[in-house]
Amino acid sequence: MTPSRRLSQAISEGDGISLIVPVERPDAATAAEADGAEALLARGTAIAAIRAATSLPVVSYLERGAPEGDACIVGADADWEHLHALDVEIVVRVEHEDELEEALERHDPEIFVLACGESDERLERVLDLLSDVPAGKLAIAELPGVTREEIDELERAGCDAVLVGASAPER
Image 1 (tube, rainbow, N blue to C red):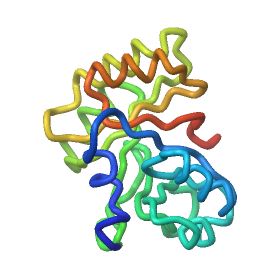
Image 2 (image 1 turned 180 degrees about the vertical axis):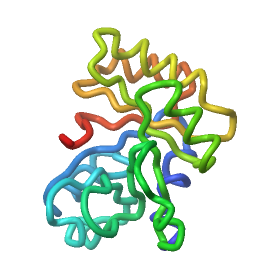
Image 3 (image 1 turned 60 degrees about the vertical axis):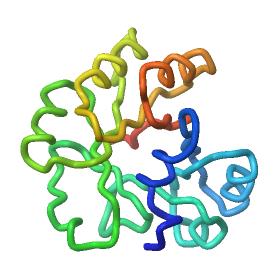
C-alpha cells in the first residue's frame, strides 16, 4: 500500500473533519474525489475498478473472503486476526462502550467507526462513544443521513472523519 492510500494518514492530515463517501462505481469515485472526499467507502463488486479510478484510500466492510480495499471495517466481535498479515488497515466498528473497551483490550486498533445503531439520539450516542476513544486513536462517525450541523458538531468534538450517507451492511 502506498502512503497516499493509507486511510489513517488521509483522515489525520489537514484541517477539519474528513469526509468518507460511499461509492459503487468508478465514475462515482472520481466525482467524489473531485468534490473533496478524503476517502471512499466501496460497496458492491467493483472495488478493484474503484481503486484504479482514484488515488484516495478505499475502505470496505469485511463481508466475504479477503478485503479488497486499503482499509477494512470489521465488527468488534468478528474474527479478524488474520487481517494483520495483509497489507490493509483495520477499522473496528463499535456501537456500544463495552464493544469499544473489548476491542481496545484485545486488539488495540488505531481506527474506530463509531456507530449510532438504532438509537433515537444518534448524534449523542456517537459523541458518547467518541469521549471514550483514547487520545491518539482515530474516530470515524457513522451516522446515516448525517446533516451539515451534525458534521460541524462532530468536528468540534474532535471526530476525525464521518461516513457520509453510509451505514453498515445488513447482517
